[in-house]
Image (cartoon, rainbow, N blue to C red; front, side, top):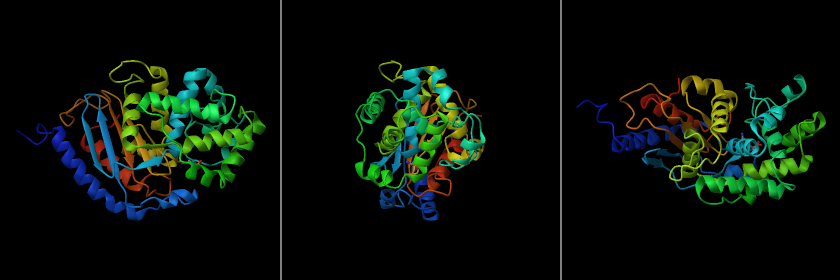
Length: 328
Ligand code: GLN
């Protein structure tokens, strides 16, 4: 029996353990996000991964128990919720689907482009617009709608980390600038302070990597819940969201991540990465014991200059290559 044919969940688990310990050393090369004061408290050397397959294979390694705030990963969820509530075409009147190649919180393209529609919902400008259009009259109602959607996805209603929210609320000058600009150009559908409150509360939702893997798997399964076979969101929304993750999900590293890792993923500055591996995405291969969809959650709060988990990206690159998870 050759080594490839011997690949089993047990041998995958062993590999994963080796890789997590190997890539953990790179956490020293990054730093925890400091522009949101409360995020500085994270343990720089943490690294954990959780993988879930359609067939119920669960692989986990490293620091798997920690909860962390979603930060930009929430942009995926708010986009899904806005599209489910208003329809894709209505949402796309207010936010485009073009990558920018700019930092996630960049403002300058908003003025350069006409009529000023934010480039995509995975950057701050687009996500603030999306937050402003969520259903509900008040920030509380808008946020609660998203928490209910997450409850359907992971089986419990998550909490909001109030300390992280307040820490960012007090320092969100750049996000407020984006929101004022969007208001000026007609791309903000509620008052500025309400939109910022909703956006920042969504960034402060706390989940763990097992939850990320569940949501990633749900995306990979085109929105169909394992077990109940109910659609939590439509296939069209799932396809569009995965495409946006692939093209825009890793900030101004998105092109390189697509080229060299090759899977749809979304990161947050707290160090989380959520990935969705659709079924049949890779070439048929002996390297995968299970060719069905997978969801992956990674946490490693030491981030690089783009805002992505430094060790998390390396870990995903390794396993996408070794296990043929690449889309193309
Ligand atoms: N709350 C963060 C911000 O708005 C989210 C950014 C991120 O994760 N890249 O700056």
